[in-house]
Length: 619
Image: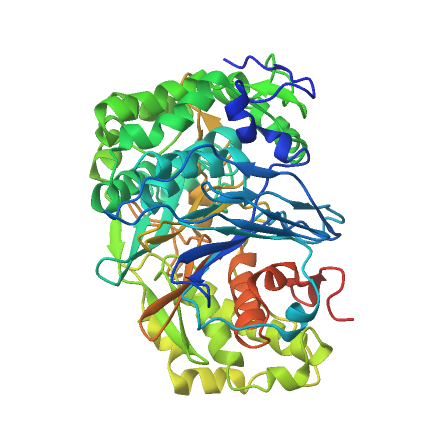
């Protein structure tokens, strides 16, 4: 049941020591994005994290907000290490030194403009390994970035919402590591950004495990229901895959991924990791303006389903307004059941039984047996070498291969000579995107059913042949043959701890509030990943029972000489490979520091000859 109430401007998150966790730090949207750099000061043997934080909007400028700081200090995991000196925060026109304490995370925002670019609400990166990152001469001479830099002595977290960042830091302060913290943040984001993510969706992650120097990937995406066939859909009158409703629901894999990550790498149990999300869901949180606006945009969709209407609409009629206090006791109960009984309560247990019974009444295809058969996959990331670095993505069914192919297509070009965001530069990059996405939509599907080895798309001969198709004078009009959903909703976050562990983490329900279906009393929206299939005969991504659909969400990672450099990611459907590529080129080719790379104007190729470019790009 929804019990919102207006939040006066003075009302913050409970007690004084918790006020920093409230959304006063971000009156506009509560959306964070950032980078963290881990290295050593030249004059000291001590390590530090450097964090660039803030939201990326469509167009406009960043707006400074107060910092978000958690009380207390991180317990040292190394005997005799002693106290680490303080953090330094740099802002435009001001410099502040914190004498002692934990990481400081600052949330800042850029105002939004036209709706030409997608709501790619976060681009986050942890940037590590001093001595291997590029340095911008311009940045040394003047503060060109639109967002400020934050330094932290032991650990860092970058998420799209202050409460999620606070939860990550709380978990690490309580003895957890980066993996525990990432899962805790993802769970909190289910509460505070329910249209974007949650336990009703899927999750992917790349983990750098410092103890062994190992890079590990996990694919926690769910399969289609055993009754989801072309014939069944055609019998119901569908000529294309349904984009919402119970028929679009696939097995929600996120919880299995959260549990697998915590079990393999974490220091805490899942119950402790879920505690912040349970608390916030029960006690409530103030809805911020950006979230309120996006929530309102989905109100009509939510009103079509009884469970969604009762869970997410005030009095069953409207979305919560900015400043209203929102609680989700149903989600708190679902999280508590998982904390008490383990993930099996969803995958074959009582929570799962309620889910499939509710879906069946609405025409869904997922069965209890489908839930019980679900398991996440540990996968080996795929990578390509680029100018001395190795860029890593997860293998299909995601679109990470497209980002790698784009990098391969432009790697030998004189990008520096063209000039950053010049007409020539943008032309080559956009044409490379078209070629990579044509391959993506032709070949990529569930890894178990793909017709080709995805790495063959990165072979030198193939890439050279594709590059030769770029016309230096004309833009190609024919692009990605697949059908894309334009309102893809995703969260990305990244966390690093004092032991050097890092996680690049992404979680999504696909469209806004996913399928628009909430099983009454459960408190979370179910994803609509079934919309990622096609009904076209002969296509590798053709819908079939218990098959993984094509996925848009992709975490990224960079290493150099076997050492971690950065964990990175973006949000926004098909923008993700384009965003990955532009971010990496900004840093690895043009020598931008992470904050400059985030703030630089970006393009998004939409379709055909349509391209959206942020203000300042291509000028």
